[in-house]
Length: 365
Image 1 (tube, rainbow, N blue to C red):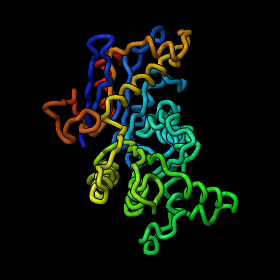
Image 2 (cartoon, one colour):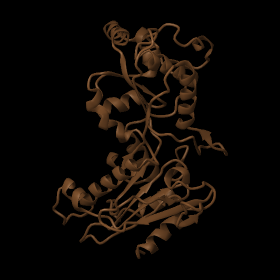
Image 3 (cartoon, rainbow, N blue to C red):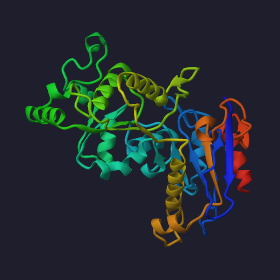
């Protein structure tokens, strides 16, 4: 699989955009006397890791962004449409796999922007969907009244008619196996409060159940088994149709799940499904990544006595790079070959080649 680089150089201080770089990684350094003029964002799946295994020399390439003492010297972030776990946990995993110190602030997952919606829902009941620890993620963000779809569905007898035929066990029913006080509290919560929003953080593990339960929630106004009601809010962390995993050909992603849910909902409900999607290639994701990169700048210079927020508001990058393997998401191009409308600066096969390209481009050796 070829990797690509795309670089956009800003034309003015008011027109800075995070550029995309297709391939696996990039490194750069800068004078310790002044802030870096460039920053880097790396995709993770298919670029840095594949099925939690480092690929393309990624550990060696990423280490070049640190000094000999292991301190970060070049501002970079991981910008991924993946997710399902808290950023703090993902940072620990990346640190161990790559042999460097990655901070939680450097991990920008598809669902990271959900934290901006905390005040909107305050103490309202919300449901979190996806593999991993979706409810824990939302709780970490500050949502006070959140249940995973596993726990939520477990409170309704027979809501999943196929449950008796499923041979796997995802987790015990929260409403049947919790302490009595917790069981009563959850039952009361689910049966009396309407779900105000459903958040799809990562790939659904059980499509049939999750589509069924989400349709129940969305078409009844948040109280399954009741009459038709106003649709609660629905948020998808991203809309990737497919992604590259360990299998030779791509696997269906969250976008495929969204298509399935939307198709079924629109057949059983008089009004089309309403939803909001986050993740790449939405421009606000890249703008947020640039802001985080700016905030990292202050930590890279011991002699710059300026607060993070001050640097973020005043510092301007000359060039921003995006390193990825999926042009349709990262630079809106074709995946296997260069694209006429969204061409990569360079197509390479390894992370080392990508790093060398960027270093030479920045006159850093």
